[in-house]
Image (cartoon, rainbow, N blue to C red; front, side, top):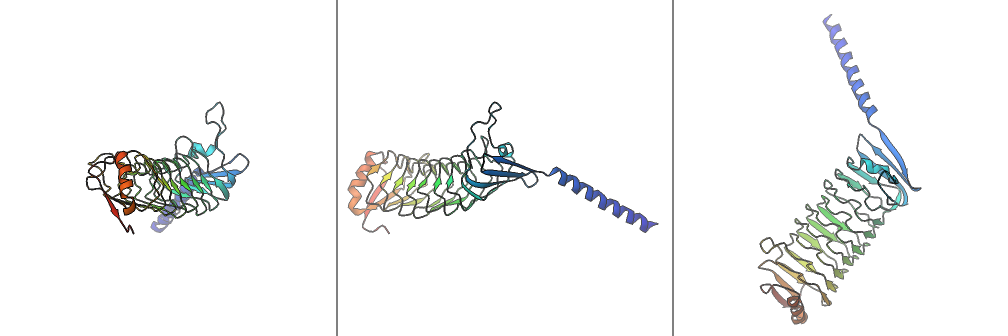
Length: 305
């Protein structure tokens, strides 16, 4: 009798577990849809994964209100999404890909190798994502594309000619930015307010560092490459002298003709700027006239390797 009761209890437990699993599976749904004529999407409510596939551009929504409800319906789930995969032959994301709210819970992002353009605000405010691999064929990263995300490191591919304005600004966990040879312009505020950024590698292909591009970062040293022609307003400015971290700047370029105002505003008391010896008088005069603090030393050197 005792064994029979045990068997019955075991069978009952199995049935209960099966019932619970079935109920859970029934609740998990794959929501699907089309956007315009070229994009298909699916959202797994269990995995919280959004998959976009198709070809060409993901078109931007015309409107997102009830009167003109022409918007991609995945935006309704954007705040729940944990994983995003862009597949197929998609070449462009759309501005505000997640709608006005952003992918605030996204932790994983996989981009198609065919992707050429990341449009403005595509992944902005994705605070929980810590890494992303940008496709080697990527050509444009537009304004605020990754603004306010949780990225810790980023590598900019060589075919991206310009890092868009504020494209990585306010990424408060970003520590390392590696820019590949081929990139020419660091846009206005591209890494502004990345207050944990301690390492940046800039290639010789860089010609312009636009205004506030590295303002209020945690850089302690930086090398400005040999082909730079322009350094914009407050490019390396600090929030205050007390919070300033930058102590060594090496300007290898002999081609700088355009200097912005207050490039090194509120600089660290120990900041030293090394410049080509043949350009020492010219560069120091330009920097002082644009607001370089008197306590910052400018030193000319023959070799800046």
